[in-house]
Length: 228
Length: 228
DNA sequence: CGTACCGTTGAGGTGAGTCAAAGTAAGTGG
DNA sequence: CCACTTACTTTGACTCACCTCAACGGTACG
Image 1 (cartoon, helix red, strand yellow):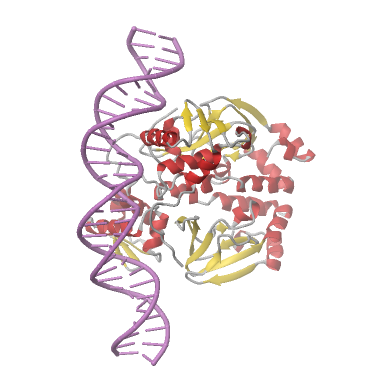
Image 2 (tube, rainbow over the protein chains, first blue to last red):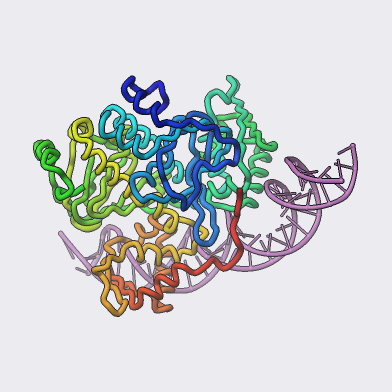
């Protein structure tokens, strides 16, 4: 839902109450437990959505990119945010107060349809399958993460890619449902196999095909459970 | 979104194209990979939503109960179902063809609001945290499942509960991101601890408080990763 | 009374968690 | 520019919960 998607009438309503704000790395757009007062849409940059449980165990469950909505669940369901949204790379973020959103829904069906399509675009639940499934070895989960993060513009014709991954080992671990030490060891393994080279925040993938092949290795054994 | 939630005008439109169908145990409401043509709403009963990956590994990611919507993601995003919906206990299911849903959204803002609230009610992503997190021992994950499944009407005043869990070991395993053998062992452990007794499809919880306490055991060690 | 699942049990192996300690990078202030 | 602090990363040794495999027991059903 960028401006370019809006019709003239929608924009009029939006401009009256919309706020665009720039957040920098590590800023929190909203925090778990705080009151949800509106809807956010990232216009640029990346952010993480994470949850912390009663025992301080941190779970990252979504990487948010440009054009994606956050805060909608809290907006229509409960009124407290169930997660924290924290910025990875500087973001321009639109804020729509709850009243504005509800007003737009009531008055502009076109807005609603785009809104729903934006919601359906949320890849969180889907990504969890390849990033958090413990039957997949950590090394492969890390490959899957790279494949999700690589954009076409990161790649050269030869199949080599260079991407920025401005995210701590700790947060990669929280995203892949494992521990920082295991991330370190997985990175080391990928380096030795020549599949991906991590240096600081920069990852170099010499051969995208090899990375893809690695992440599609069948599990060493068995056939898993079929039913019905 | 049961009939009781509908306004008169909504119902008129709905009744023209709505189909209610009864499904029996193990029936599939829709299948992964098939074309999504509409929206489903369970009026009664329970169903499982599961996904199977390229290596036949089955992941159950949601238990659907009465009043919940399924198929919406495929409806507004891609047009192929990403999961299979399979019935646990006989269900009455409303089917709303895609066109009807879009028409209602365009014409009845009140419908849209209820629709969005129903979507926000989806506990799938939230439940995954307590059911599929591998830092939680299988035994505790099983306790969490019981706590999610127990309804107030299953319980007596004394704190004892009896519930039906018409679900295979294999599917419990797919839901808890583990293996059938581990489920068997966890069930055995809970029995020995006197927390829950599994007999066929019936589970007896002598003391709900004890079950709750068990599922809130802090992890044996450490403080997990804090950041930012 | 097979056949076909489903569930249980035991033995054995291992990937990843845990812990502790050392190494490195990134501020901060004088 | 250099001490000093603090936070992050890496490494190695150890441990363990769970997976895997294989065999057996139950139960439903034609």
